[in-house]
Length: 314
Ligand SMILES: Nc1ncnc2c1ncn2[C@@H]1O[C@H](COP(=O)(O)OP(=O)(O)OP(=O)(O)O)[C@@H](O)[C@H]1O
Ligand SMILES: [Mg+2]
Image (cartoon, helix red, strand yellow):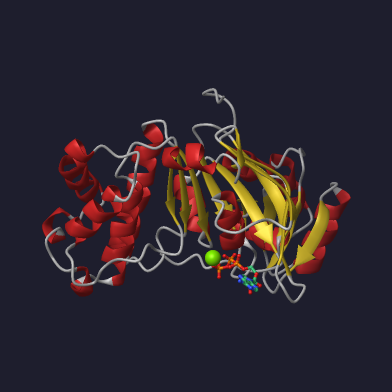
């Protein structure tokens, strides 16, 4: 049986090798803490969707195990999945039915859903995703973003302990993206654990408490977002025309990992007292056009981890 504090998602050595030999997910050990908003971050093709499909029992792992809400998947899926809301590969909507009618249909197919509260729950779910005004419109006339929100509404028809979402802001305009992020934070505040994949770093920075980073099917990092930030050591940056002299002075003071660009000298000052640097540079006749500590962005950290950039737009 599950308890409140046990991690709602745990995998051990989870692996998927597709026919043809390609390893899409390579022995990953995930542990998603209860109550977290867990960002599953990685570039295109890094194995996020494949992992999520295995979590939900939609495809079988080649090796390894999955526990959802304390129970083994896929063995316990009939018991577990009603407690999990999922958005993966968008549900198939009837285009000639309204959004509301589609929601009611999905709910009717759910044996665990109470038919007496169906209409009220559909109304609340549509309200939550901002589709109340379009509830009676045919889905055929929905934009991509509206369909995406309707898909999230399907996952919200019942109260869930865990939401597993594959790129929930995919296809949304900036306004829709903000609304969905807000919604995720609200759901988390209500105590729902959220596991959400994304290739947008901004999403992780704005919404997530924890993050795991995928690269080429491997899990290269897993920690709290706060720890990731704290690890990024600030760099001392001196803007000057006297590059050589500045570099030499900083080196003599113990600054390491020195790099010179066209206008700056930068380095790792560690725990050294930075007020000493300005005085030493002035004493060495270095003209200072700018001086300060710069913290690298999370993006730079992830680029370093995965060797690839992330789309940080939106
Ligand atoms: N059914 C399949 N058969 C063979 N290869 C597959 C299959 N599904 C995915 N792959 C491959 O597995 C790798 C991981 O794909 P996956 O869809 O999990 O990545 P992703 O991180 O979700 O990417 P994206 O950000 O583009 O959604 C890719 O190289 C992909 O081509
Ligand atoms: Mg994907």
